[in-house]
Image (cartoon, rainbow over all chains, first blue to last red):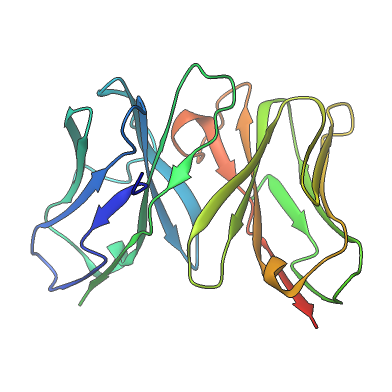
Length: 115
Length: 115
């Protein structure tokens, strides 16, 4: 298995632009998580989905952030408009909910820089 | 106030030493996670605990619910164990400022194992 795939790996954009981050979870996993990591705040769980349904988005910082999971093999995290303080590494992770192990498999991350 | 505290923040040890990393939290939790972040940025989920002890290879994780404390131990440490080790807790009662799913992360322990 290729593991969790994220794209792009690096994104540099200007303030005010729309940014879309993409994630392909491990085939067969039914839970998907979006995290953000910064030096100041560390790791934060933004939102997670079970069976493509958003369960808890209370970690999403502002209305400028939105996430979708149109099917079991694809999710997006969108920032519109982007701001310099959104610069961070965004990780996607997937797991098999209900297996009891709750082990999450992380993607390599997308490093976002907003200038 | 960060209610998940890790200690030490930084630890340098010699190959072969027994390593202990600590995580303390303020109130009741339903689960505690240990993650490993490699120097290149990749994240691996090591353990999820709600009670007792778990072991995987040279890694051992324990949790004491009454004392609100968990430890991660590494036996026969090796330079490849050099990484940041992050503790995360899921609160029983959701707390303000926490991420989605009531998940709050510690700041991490930077571990360096010298050959």
